[in-house]
Length: 240
Length: 190
Image 1 (cartoon, one colour):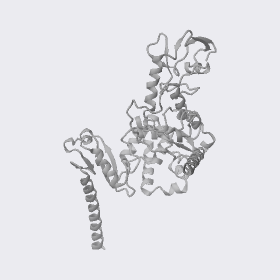
Image 2: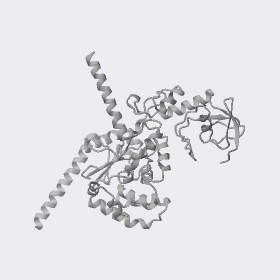
Image 3: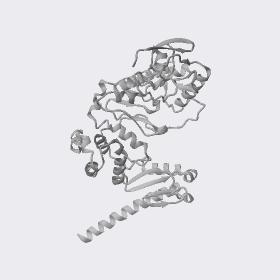
Image 4: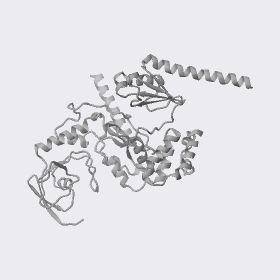
């Protein structure tokens, strides 16, 4: 990649960055927040599946996903118009239309990217504007020796699958099923002894923007804490 | 390939494989070289195993993954994308509940639920004794007989909850009769 600097304008602000870098990355590095869920730095081929990072570029028809857009000299970008907000809100509503998670009992509560984006886009985490369709999946998938996964919280951003497959060796996560019933699966991890080494990596749980994927150890500790809190609360209420 | 795979298993997992499954795995191993070890052969291989054995055992999928040099997650992901692949062995009495448009309108979902409750398995599963397997299908072409169910290769028409009970009872009775018949034959021969 050339180190030649180009200058772009984002919301009226001039920014210089190396030619060919991704627009989303440049914006985030310059404190212009653009919501995103499926993008990770270093991706050569971002999936652009969450549709939250839409921006408008002068001279281009419609909106573009900034995670896939490489910057060019003289590019004029708008990231905060009403139209963009509306579009992102639609994308967000679609994302949470299948959300069945409960924030109070979620391991990611208060550091969940979905919560942050909901606040940024001024949208509730459960939408009433779209019909809720029940997905057909198990409550918890825990056939992996180290990891556990809750499909109901998952936004299917694919970050975990991406980071897992960047690592050369060991058991690999992947998507399974299709359409609205798509999940992340640990299928075959019980046959693969290297899946026990996942304990030392846990890269997938670190990139999970929500609380869908976590290590079993961390999870059981968290559940114990939640139970303790609930018991304490019940005890307080009964003594009042 | 199979030897290595079996050697890597925990003793409890090794014990869980019955002779029938082992036979399937050996057959899969023997048939595999018919196909080129290329990713494009994944679906043909899966279709071959499904067609020959009626389902895809987990160890067979691991063997396919090793043979083609892809991860088992990828193989499973692709196999679960298509409805034609099953992951449980078929039952001796496969029950297919039609949920095509006409059967749906006539309450096919209720019939499916009846079977699920009666057999204590959910759609896509096989009963532990491998007597029944239950699945949903889209239109079997008998819309005039809705709601329809296919048991083995026999079509049951205008199915109602009481008829669900009747179908199961009939199978149970036939099974008992066959068992008695065999006993009598054995006694006569012995």
